[in-house]
Image 1 (tube, rainbow, N blue to C red):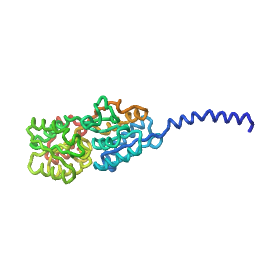
Image 2: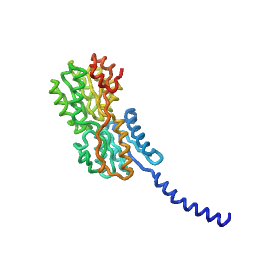
Image 3: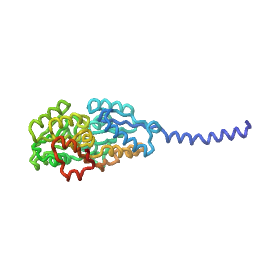
Image 4: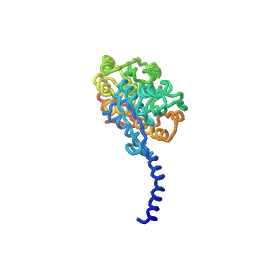
Length: 331
């Protein structure tokens, strides 16, 4: 090789070095953790994480190329939530996505510095995750899924579809529900008084507790059930749905999958949409934004679903006004 060609080759390579270095920096692998309240085999939980991944991909983040996503699935177990929170924090990710109130609480106990984007949390101010919705003030921000007034709305729906209900239980797990089960209680009891329905608090921590509570409601005609917005309720939805059917108890749920799995009716925010909306917040954090400066967002998409097959099995005729309001009717 001639000397001039050699020098030109070296000069060209040297000029390319800064570009190569810049490309490597742009493609630097970032890392996030995702801690889910559901079990890994839950198709609904998988749909939530898929919505998050889809949103991230639209913003240029690809798992395995410039982003690594580490998942943990707690299956409704508070001790597993705490253990997995510790695992994820020890990996020092750039951010953590938390699903539900108890998962967010577990991560908050473990870190006050790693940015956290919470998804489907009901009362982040009351639970001490943020100072206010507009100014979170710490390392946590994200998306709420439901307001406390929903407790009364759920009972009103039970009354509309089953007007003979005279006793209704609000079911929750004190270890996992927002404000240990009191968050929805005020509006539930107010609606019960207006509708002349006896309100019952049903605190449950296991499938056996769920079975006992629903059997008690079904012993005398006129029992109804509100299964609150609580990750435990969704993880254990199969037991609730089967026992409600067996004991002829009309039940309302906060999430559409419970109705698709055989429940009577549901009304609540679309959690898949919430996870999709988490992606821009993760993107902003990975580009340097602080959770303290990102306002907590309220839900924008709600779903009202009715299962006509279940209504028929319970001997209920669904009013036309309810059918007209439904986003989905399962036949």
